[in-house]
Length: 465
Picture 1: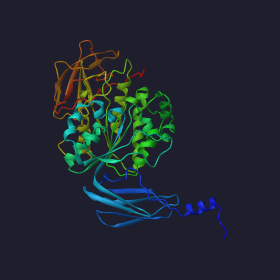
Picture 2: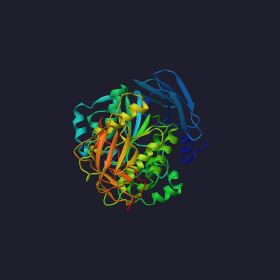
Picture 3: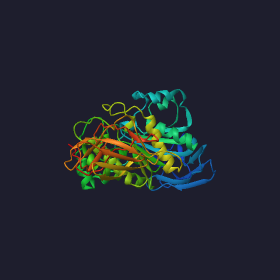
Picture 4: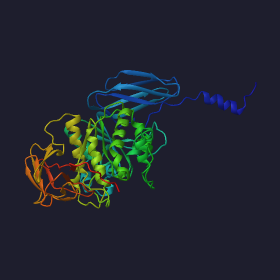
């Protein structure tokens, strides 16, 4: 009998070895699926292999054939919030995903202020540890990962919230999710993708940065540094692209400090990122974000300009901005420790705008208009129907200028939702600014307690350097 060479035998054997059906990390036991959604299930298999899927909430058998390149994907309608459920996926092998909940899923992303957790020495989180265990809050933490090209998988696993898992999970995300879980009374899944020091460009597909001359030129001003990526697309490719097939309710975002070197284009870069994410998820995702906190960046206006650019992003539909200037104890620390109230304020935006709850105070008072009469300026504000209050005898960080553009400290008189502003040195005022330096912390708020957002009435150039 003719014997086949060893290499030929190995080749024949290899041809008959079939690959197991595989799933990405984000599809696993303990996960939370978005309720009442067309949820994608996907993975890898033999080309042409028939994959059968059974979800225990309907016990219906769905099936799909693997593509020629060994991928499969199917959309399964999810029910109203509930669980736990089981999903069985069967091809040549069988995968059983158990302890699955259906509820609300949010991506929580940004740089270090989103990344901060109990191990950073946060007292609010430490106080939560003895009582934080909640099987209806689930975490999926994506470790720092970069790539030059979009990836279809990333490291990570779904875990239930307990004291061990919370220690290394985003504090802002946790307090946001805890509030949603309490108010909505549904399971909440939180996907954290954050990396301290990163600029917004790395979270945006590179072609959307390099294909726009303004953004490309601006990105070239970013300063390379050891410890974090700065090239466009690197974090999007490694940490966002792999989860974009996964249905979510929306995203929360805390970032901006990493863009002080090119602050003047932040609004365009950020809105471009939001548009890219919405396109990737094929949904008009709500994005609620945090305006960066006061910090002593130096003699230039870099922090002020980032905050102004962030405020402009509010013009984009389905976005909301949280002001945190009143939550800062030390302007020499770029990492304020109060993440509890940041998370609650983000959750209030979501409850009001995404889930349509009423009676929630969530919008900061914002500048609306001005009127000059003699040596006084009358300013009116939105989101202050109950009126404004001033903490202390004198308004802080409020300044006024005439045509010479020299600003002087101003006095303010509150009349409902209006400020009457003046200064003895300015006889013919033309402009008013509030909290318009890098480390400025004001003392005016709405009667509901939310701080007045930084504003200026002029459009004079703010030099970045």
